[in-house]
Length: 313
Image (tube, rainbow, N blue to C red; front, side, top):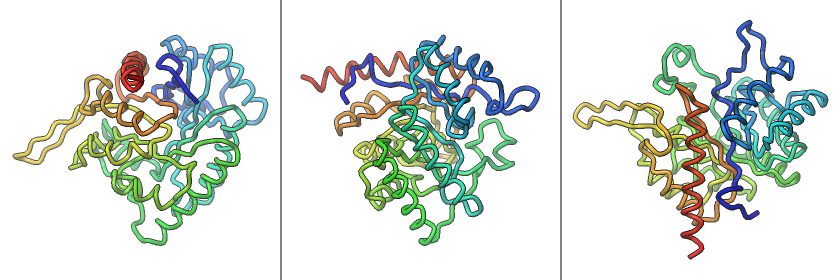
């Protein structure tokens, strides 16, 4: 599919909207009018696409009538659904791995049913108590993934299984890069996706997840150089990263795409040069996340216009 800078699918993340109502009711079980109120804010911010990330509601877990209601709300608001992301549904969780795999298959079927082009999965689990207790969860240690070769091989096989399913129904599978997982560094991510060796499986090159860490990480440009040839459905966000070489101190803070450490103009140009042709998702933590994402969309479309024009010369 060929898109222009104006038509490229750029979805808003639902991260700014909690999955619970003030009384503790899950929005998953709420009246569709509650979903409509959140989605109206997304459309009002200038978005024409949304990713119903399952930390907000799981569209794949809705019954047929409620899924139809969700889609009707999106249509009425002029919102397409180019992709569906899962959050903290570790495909090889020691206790719930088979359950997460079965859920991932349902997400793929749901994506095909509603016309979404891509799904995003990962190997990161629920936030730990220490992460929940701090301002920015990435500053505390998350759940480590088993390092034994048997579990990694299982992860490869389950991902390949999802890739085969995606290919059957025309849905791309993207693996979200995340620390301390099999796709937790650029080199590990490339090695993993090459071991999976399925054309429907790509990398969600969400390098913001890595740049924000308060520890040494690969330079962002090196991550892009290695991962851009494998890029699929892509979560974009940025962070200001400050490093004190004398003490080893690292501090990070969420930033707009234009103002953080990652040069997204260079990163996107590199990906387009490798034939990137998947939707984008915009994310931001803290403050007015939706407002920042709205400004990021304007910037991203400017970058796409310049990069596509340059490629056409």
